[in-house]
Length: 409
Ligand code: MRU
Image (cartoon, rainbow, N blue to C red; front, side, top):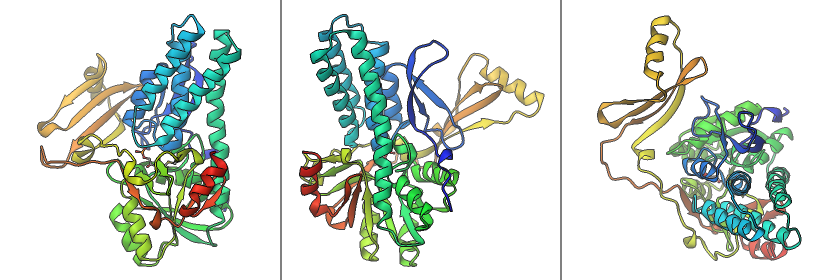
């Protein structure tokens, strides 16, 4: 059965905004997917920074591309530099700022450093600011293209690990939306499915922000890959029932010894997979390897807002199908976004969306002020990882040091 790759979503790209003729970083707003498919255009560094913090763009490889594009958009639209020295200083500051937007995925810092280093190298021989600015835009765009190629290679490598008709389980979203295109795990699934090596994908919902339920299932269904959504806590029972042949997850940072940070819940999958004798594969580009960190306890783990656990967010389009209803919504939204207050702290914003009305809402479903701990990632020890699938090959965690020396220098 062939995958329809023309239907998988693209996460982030560079374009010119028709409304003002200026360049911008365009991204599919992943906070509202899958029921509202808004495209955001960020014309300032701060816009991309907010998009990263709010998870409008997310997933380690996509964050690497976002960092590079953010610096390029800053250079194009905001830098007031009149000399190459000033411009390089602006680039350095923009790179530092965007690197801080989220702490765990090393690709964010990697993407910013690559762009910054490229700017400095170019400036050694080129002294025309316009030419330099154009060069970094081209470089950032090329990073997105390179990421697609890397993911295709990861897909080809990963497919070799699967037997015919495998039933695989995945966590979070390491698909096209988490990268420039195709995904890491996504690419393995698409490639393997095309080769008849996958018959079923179990998709973990991925509490608390449901990247599996909202994004991965949507992406797989668009591509025509059979998938079934489960809660994170059902995964062990599916393994016990003999319904899972391999676990495939992405990574936000891989240490030199193979310890791997990924979305919270990955560690329990690895423990359960080991218990039930199921191979556990991490699929990630070489850019996710942080050879400066010896082992997993050194990885900074992002702690996120308590509201992600205290309730849930959703967005939608309102069908105002009679004149009384549309008149009421016209009044509510006449002066722009309308904030609606509820007892117990639920929140809703109503706004006009073309000829329709839309809402963003957060509904609380826990006791007010309940103490909350909300780490976004956990670290899976290398001993629980069967192999790390990269564009340069499939490595056992204990072969990683050799692979780093060979491929990362
Ligand atoms: O918080 P998120 O949604 O950015 O977390 C994403 C993940 O944990 C992914 O599995 C990881 O970044 C790999 S994406 C190819």
